[in-house]
Amino acid sequence: MADAILTSLVYVERDGKYLMLHRTKRENDVNAGKWIGVGGKFEQDESPEECAIRETREETGLTLLRPVFRGIVTFVNDVCPTEYMHLFTCDDFAGTVRDCDEGELAWVEKSRVPSLPLWAGDRIFLSLLSRDAPFFSLKLVYTGDTLVRAILDGRELPL
Image 1: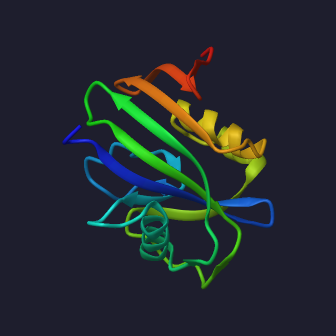
Image 2: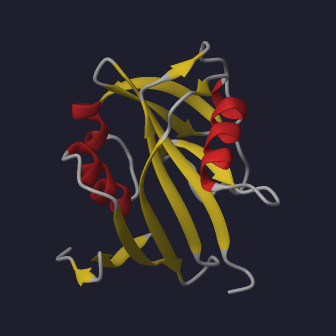
């Protein structure tokens, strides 16, 4: 467990849209070409909420006022350390979106998000968010870029 990664990911919401980040600017980016929410790794002694607020401000210029903790996603991959991602949504924020050094930010209609290049597992938790599911624990197991297992609240999901 020593090399596990702790992260927060936020889907900022406005007018039926999510603020999505198209990852196009970093070299050797595991998310290259994919669309994701905003977020990143915990700093020393941060809580999940503190990480979400800091990362959103750094990547977008927005200040989250009331992030909502929606679930924990455990990513297991044969080529990366295990990641425990703390998933948030937020529709209460201040500020103006600015350029991001990790890619292009865009407000995308929630109904269009599934048609974007996403990780297969992201489609699962985005579906849970769209259904306003209660707090959840989702484990996603990948071999390389291929999702091979998904376990929601301890129950295997069909892929």
